[in-house]
Length: 278
Image 1 (cartoon, rainbow, N blue to C red):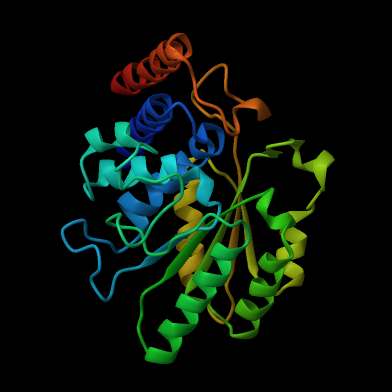
Image 2: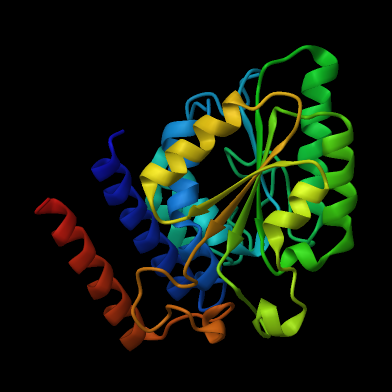
């Protein structure tokens, strides 16, 4: 995909996020929207995955460590063809396979069930070690929240990843600076995030998490890095793309009502129209 196609796809992913959370009347739109460009690049460009064969042995693995942003994950998988986009409206509903957190047993394309913050990166480290032990060349990607890295388990896993020289592991931190209680810098500051990962012997790349050129360059650099894992610190905007959600901690875990949904979709339609003019 070229940059414009990726931007259009990310906008469709955002529409799916808003639609799913509105339909469920609950969920986590803010952090899903901030990570939409990262999700899009991973599943449409970077990763070796096949919707027709979700469990193929040589696929790259993805672990959503901040599991509550499942709406972003699901919308990406649906738009990539793992399951029908129409199913997004069943999010969190009785009998739906699209639960509030990813479920590897029932959702095509999900490699690890997640939700308990801090645990996803540990699973990703285990997968990366497994690949090394088996001589497999698949790569492992895990997406963390910046509030999530307040969890001690994140740093235990990071210490092991560097110790085992897991150059097949890429940790992405969605640094939107907001968690459920407010700015991460005020709740329990993890800054400087880049220096912390460097201290744990990661190769660290700082990027604008909404710039596809920067995203592409970062993942290329990660592939070329040998002997140590990579951490990509992606500076993002919580609620990106929806005017009234942007940079608002209140939209961490809330669903838009009908009026707000209409405004949100109108915002995203305008973005889509602008992209079509490019």
